[in-house]
Length: 191
Image 1 (spheres, rainbow, N blue to C red):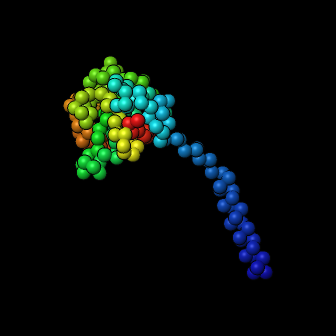
Image 2: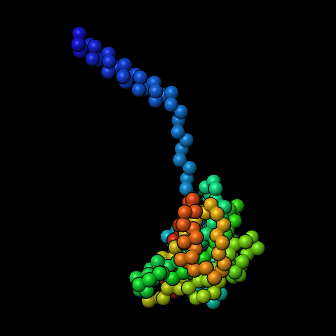
Image 3: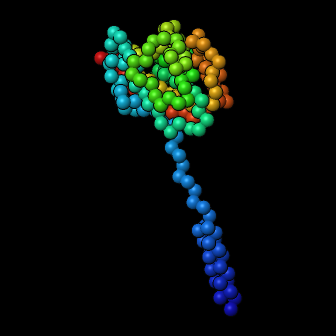
């Protein structure tokens, strides 16, 4: 009798748990995170010469982003070469930095104008060379491919900075305001 009672109790517990699980509302699938892509090159792929210092007049690649989180007011973009940091024993080489890209934007077209402030309010800061705008990859030919990382930050604010802002200034201003981040990497060395 004790065995029958134990089996009935166990069956009741399982049935109750199953009923509670069936009655619970289904959780919505997780929304994909912010995604950064380019039609100019694949993530992890080779960056074509027209976007690099192998070309006498390199242009910026087309960038697109999707799955923008709610609350994104602006975007900030930082392109850098992390492979140079060990050589310099300091910050790696900054190739492009733009911020206050409107939160309604879904990308940057190929060949962004080399001006400090774009018509939509986007601000381009100075690269490693001290000039505003895009500086194409330029790793030397005899060495290995360098990895050029494009980091896109969705921010819940507009940054109160000028084109003279350093990367450290931008990172400090973004602190506590990043709602999402995406990255894209391309490889290059001179032919």
